Length: 79
Image (cartoon, rainbow, N blue to C red; front, side, top):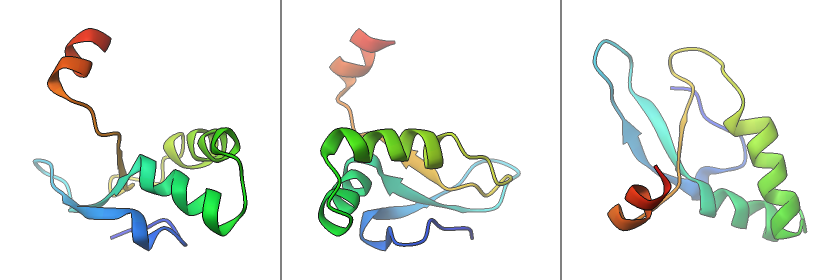
């Protein structure tokens, strides 16, 4: 499985999809916290870094999944 270096503390588990290999699942907010504490970034800098360099990256079928936790109410309102 592929993983993002330096973000082990943000791993929440393993995801699976039909006809693909398992992939590591990360919590977006925990990834932000890693950058804020480890690299002394502001919250906004950390989000921008993750959105551009990680969420936007595709490295094949086992590209790790990034999860943003939301309630069903938030999902219904947003989508």
